[in-house]
Image (cartoon, helix red, strand yellow):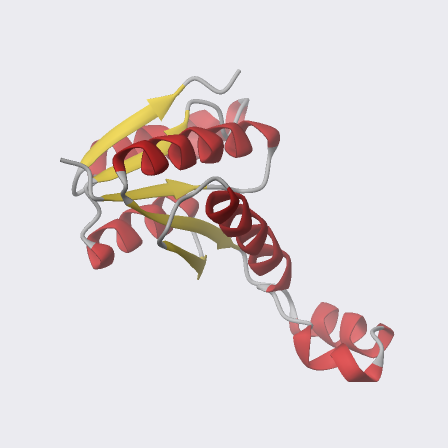
Length: 148
């Protein structure tokens, strides 16, 4: 039924709770797990400043994606340690909900798992929350887990 599960994360405690639930579900079902995170573009000036501050042997690693990649690697390692055989990660620039939906379409996911908490306050009403947007535009079933 659910051979491919996708979970979105921003590294927050609530997102980590959703990731743990997705890992548990993927392990129980023997499903592939796709972990997705989005990042916003970083200015060229900031990248240059951070690159100069980094040791020469790792300057090539300074990029807008580096924090996201580390977070995704951590989630993938947790999934593998829990017994999920196939785990893939995806870092996408831009809106989180769009990233989740795009990867779900590309990977033909059977289920998307997102947490019920995300953007709060006035921003949520102006921009729309990630779970809300995903639930309305997903190409597959969506599981919104209670993370609080």
